Image (cartoon, rainbow, N blue to C red; front, side, top):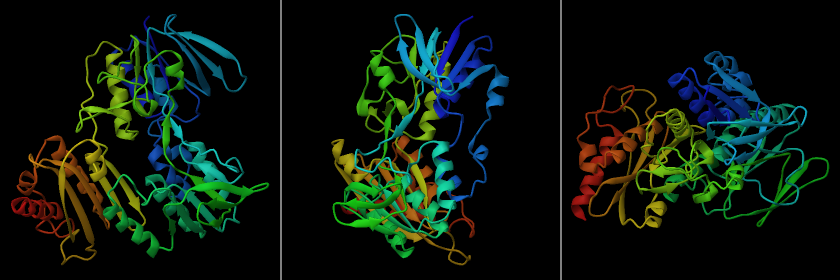
Length: 450
């Protein structure tokens, strides 16, 4: 019986295993993961910490017994320590007793994910310092802050996770500060768009310190303060959210080629540089549809798609990943944000000459209660005028409009094409001229004047 081993049990790993067993029910599929939760939503961790999700079981998309019912052998609490392509073997260590086991494979899928970047600074290991990547992280965060005594929280990093965690911890009554090394929070967006979110957080009494580097965390038996390049902040709790790095060392040690950001280099079939070994998800590179190049885009939808393709191709398929453009959406207190394609900085780094337009409009009909504001920014390529990027910041119901812009980017459409869309209208949902159409017409007008 042919045997497939999958290393990793979250989005990419379980998508791969499920696809493979559906395609070939006679295949022996074994999954090894060093965690005790599988197929969970990492993007929901802030909402568990906030208490909106009552228990950790609610984070799982599918339960272990559902995978086992499919015929997938699920081994939790096993850390993969080595890959030996010459012998087609993997070594794993069982956490509960430290025993090392060796398993052979016919095909191997590496879906080891990513881990938080932890700065090498004094005090980083103090009790009360947390990262946010796994279910256990969110459980510990909620237990810690629910225990009382947390008056000041410092979040290191103003990216999406940092912004979401600021909201998640606000209900506990602590004073919250965000420290960001860059000149702006939310560096995935242009500064003028990020400022809209930032201004809203100031209104909510969340302090933001930009252009500051954290140099140390103070405390003895637990955290008591954070030292930055500009100040000292009191802290009873610290959240570290400065990004992730791929868990690719096991692949590199096996002689598998690594790519951008040291992620495992894969082609669009999820094949690595060694035959019969595939990789998918946050440990692997991503084909960027816009730039036609290798990127690193550690997002859940990419992981699920890549895992599915890896599982298909490991069982004789010939599927190709069509690419990603970094579509991201997030909630920020009473505002929403989203981006897709290239930001201004990313487009310029890719060598594109661009122009942009920006409008602010209503989210729903002005006659209907609850009308709010939405700001939409479109980024176009010079000459072709095709849309290469879009960003949104606004009140409730704003952010999902980013999906329309993402679709237009992948269709290589221009603002003139966007202006012709037949979008739905009803007062509770949108004005008769949807904000997307207003943004498109504004861009068409600017294009004519260029």
